[in-house]
Image 1 (tube, rainbow, N blue to C red):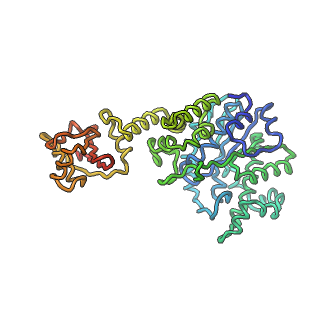
Image 2: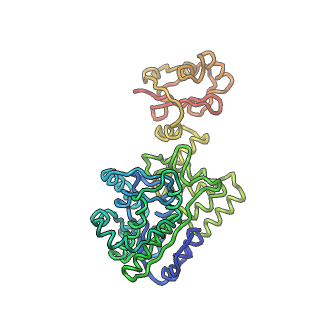
Image 3: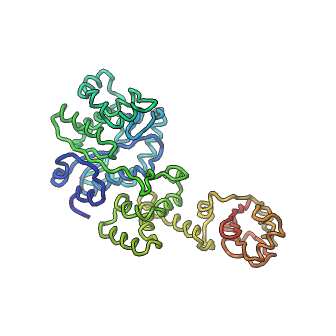
Length: 426
């Protein structure tokens, strides 16, 4: 790792734009910096990993990171990058969301580090207590409507059919006040964020200069997209969440494992702590043998370990092995069910698997994999039927409880693709 935080961010491709003087400040001083996180849900998604990793990187260089979880600004909504007004959240919803997000941020930041512990703060602590007249007098008078209208995110919304409400129009003032408050309370002189936050960050820098005659800085990172132009973190199934209750360990691991070859090296730089030499070596392996997906596998392991832990990596890799034809002999029922979550299933009473067991031909018929027991027998004779991914050779074969995975289920397969999960109802 470089000894210069700015150089580290540069080689990783994380510097989209920065204010003058920031590089020199980071090289000669230990600074306090912050990034804001929007509490629109009880979990962050993988798109939030870039700023989370940025805070963690800066802490490793000796700087002091602050994560703002926006309980105050979350009640308003940032129009940056949005095409429509946000649904306003209740205080109870925001409080619930804050608890979930805090737990996720704590996985990456060290709150006991000395002398630069991380902090999490809620901007509702100051935004919910200041009066409107006080805010307009002390903050609002330092912003011209002309400058606010010139912001790209505002212009885009004004030109849209629904326009922009005064509520969201005022968001940049609130974010500027956040920066001022952190400057006063913690000596925070740097704000980071995505490139769509540049205007909001500059507004805070200007406010600190006008009201405190202080020097503050900003750095924005690129907004991540895939090489095919799709918004990062979106799949056919929806967003990929950091919370395992929303996106399973297997699905999370697979998301990274399925990274396009063109994106793999870039994502290794963005979302892992791997060194420049290691990333370069993986990039060369990928170019030499793309079919092995070595870079993607290491990416999946590293990110899953950071976000979910070592146990999650093990579960995801066992499940992945099942998906790609590995043995189910030592598989756990939970892993199998995770892999085949979208596969049809049928419950059959446990008593039907007592000796001598349920005939495989009947099981094929009951589950609909075969139209009749006769058709199932013909499929078995032709070598096209599998139980727990082992080919069945005896058309008179039977399923007994001791063959069931964890005593709970069987996976029947017809041909290469048609699967059905049989759940043992105890």
